[in-house]
Length: 216
Image 1: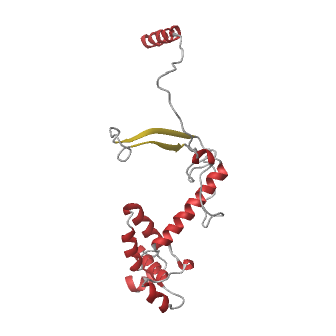
Image 2 (image 1 turned 135 degrees about the vertical axis):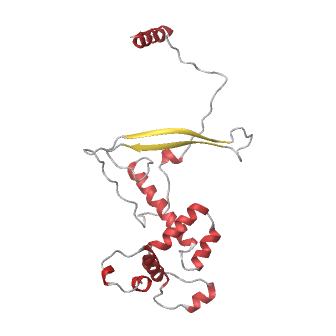
Image 3 (image 1 turned 90 degrees about the horizontal axis):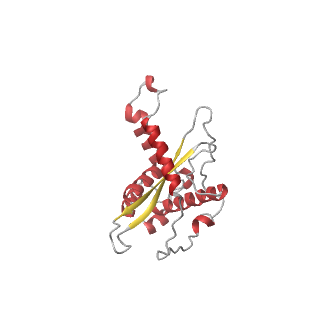
């Protein structure tokens, strides 16, 4: 394929193949069939692809397009053109990923991104996510919490890499740990507000010390 696209050149024999050449090669491998199945293709109108010859290109295109558009129709068109895996295949892989990640959560005992390292100082930042809070219905309003985790590795302590997510997973189905999956009802009694007691003398003395330090 490199000779077809770039021509014959002895100087480029040891050079790294270009991305267009690799794209064409992966497309050929993905659409090559070990045995013709005319009966199956005539009934369904679609080609059958082998999972053992599933290069990264059709998976990469499918995951990116689905993440940006969430369009099933566009995925089906790419599959019919031989550029992407089928929609059902991606649903199968996404279910495998969710199951494998849930197995990581069960092994760790808590829910954290799988890319985090062990033994590294980690900082968490939380903030509210409010969309249309003035709405009177829950259909157009949203209130949530966003959590960001930051790790601070050093040269002496780069951290320990965690095991990667493996496919297929060991089990079937996915579920969060019990403390994350079960949300107990909470009721706030607004008629009886409990205000903690505080000694005002301690606050005044602290303010006086701060003022003296600023004047110095």
